[in-house]
Image 1 (tube, rainbow, N blue to C red):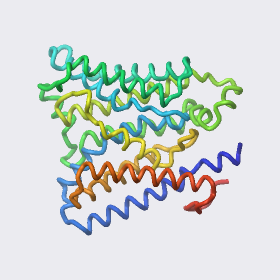
Image 2: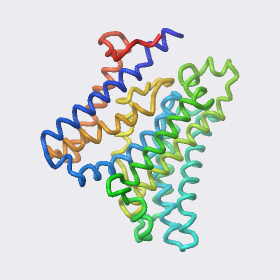
Image 3: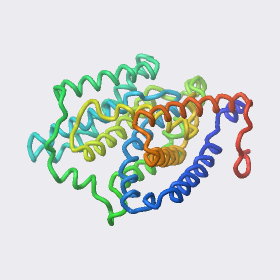
Image 4: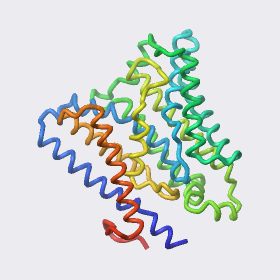
Length: 329
């Protein structure tokens, strides 16, 4: 078991490599274009990546548990649709729009957990099914077209910047990352999550309440996805069941790039944050090179294949593992 843990826990070198890569890309872009360091561009980037960054954070605990949540984008859209409907209904209901959206995400995630914990559905199939279910519910509610005409206070609040430099979505992303990091590192739920992800059979023999843990983890994923939906709602000033179609690939790529083990047990919030920043910098670089959105998707898909292949070779000892600092005992 110890040998297996050493074989799979590649989080530390991944995080260190991402930090070096992010600094190198940032420096290269700053040297390549004086516009890159302009306040407008930096604020723009700080407003863009929290959307898919929050979705990546939502998927993180589910992957650490040994599963995955493919329904996060559909959950985010459904939560934003619920909020938009309530905002348009009346000023009284508009006050409850944000809590209702968060509750929607929580329930969607908990339902995923019930399917996985009690019906024993494979997470990839369960959440693939709910991806279609939640997307279908969104289409039924909107009847196809996007919901527009939201009150001005909502967009003004979520699209504002603190001191003209720090966008509110970036603050939300940072707070969620810190809260999730604390939960996974310093709480009993986080310890059980890692133990269960590393060895589910041993966790069951140790008397761990597996169903309750799984439902809790997927409910947290749904809650964070709902926050992402609220951020998207503010940026687009509308709600639609089809928003963020390309985000799912990006979210999985971020977690794999961050060193989150696809087999469960290992992964860090810091790694995901660094992976989000790195991919935002890469995306900005591709924009400067005038790559189209389709070319970016092609690039990110290829990068996902390369990173997963490299990880497989590392796990088999066919590639030298990068080392940063003193090895862990």
